[in-house]
Image 1: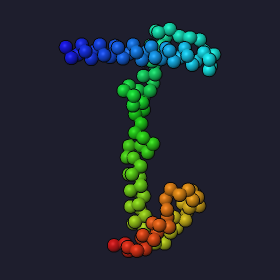
Image 2 (image 1 turned 135 degrees about the vertical axis):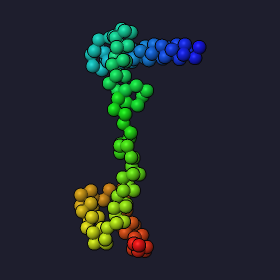
Image 3 (image 1 turned 90 degrees about the horizontal axis):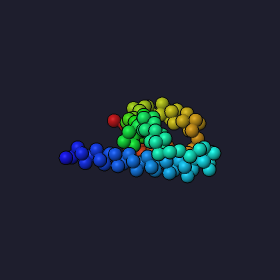
Image 4 (image 1 turned 60 degrees about the horizontal axis):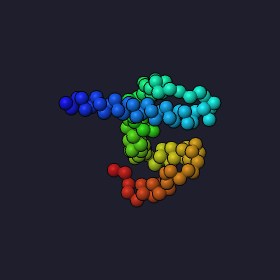
Length: 124
């Protein structure tokens, strides 16, 4: 019984989504791009094509895991801080000055504040 309910819900969703694609296409595309209007079955074909190209379940065809990839932004931030922590003072200052020249002062990372924190607590 549960399988029948799922099948009916899937068919209902497909019908509603196809109808929405058809309505949106026929409302926007002829006006914006001069395209012709489409039928329900053509909309179903477009819907299936979009699902094949861009993925099922709304996650996208390439299964993106955000802008920073699999590990995420915090992974790279932690990795960079670990790298800075393991550098000597001269090496760290050289690294910072190179990145200041490359990136400018965008305000993403307050190097001076971090520098003063490192001077307060010596490396162990």
